Image 1: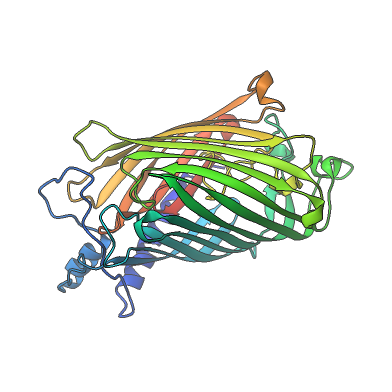
Image 2: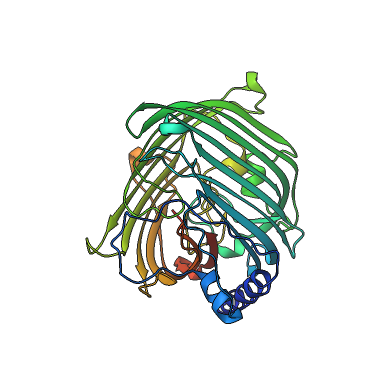
Length: 411
């Protein structure tokens, strides 16, 4: 199916919903912390969508740039192949203490709710809090999903015709406490809790034993475990990184003694780097490596096996619908070039390319590599925090196409 009409629908309807919402008296956006000094000054006042709305309404906008918090809200009406039509409300808040010392990292809260044409409910909450002087990093990654979803089987050679629907309810709670070991280097424990209930196959082909059934279909399954994460993060902001490094290693152990249905282990290795290019411009070359590996002989639940767009931020594998490929291991790399089309920062865009592989044993080779390319537009939602509305279209092999929308950058 050609998804370009869907992209146009999404863009137009999203813009209309923004205009209707922000024109309302209850519209709220509250200030910011100190201006962005990490990028060259264009000499032109920066603008966001609120400046446009106020100009259209011929009203004066009070400058809240001296404040230490920013709060952005975006409602939307959108369409995607895995959800159909959906109505959503997303929020992002960035904040620092008014008395924060120089170099204090910005804390973030991102949350939302979506309800879709296929009766799917999605409730994500991400909290990233930095204590004073960046001594500790407190993170909560939580999500509830009632999510009829498509699955295609295991491995990189599945066909689009293999698709069928699975139903499940999903609760995810991953709290993390990281302590500063030295400048920008942190480490600490994580607790993992993932619970799937009411897991059923809806419309598999008659007479066909699915990969899910072969792997072990269970109506309910729990993964409860502990882990350790070590990360290095020299970025100033999560919402709009413009330079610096991010690298992390996460080990997860899920013993039956902690309530897991099966015993298994995994490792996630991730790296990101941001390079102003050209050096004195506001354009950014961003690089991302994400490697999700099952180690040992354990068997993770089918729905927790490495799969595209099932990372913590659900962003890997642009150009493919969520869950298009699934396997025991995932190796992923993406590069993206972010450009500002207007010197005011209101409009921008990106081009990206990525590749993913699902080798049974990474030490023996990658196997089939699945590439994708695409492009997107960026509209500045909050000029103080740097929050963009990101709308991307990508395509991969075998006719794969997908649209994705984010509040903030993809990585």
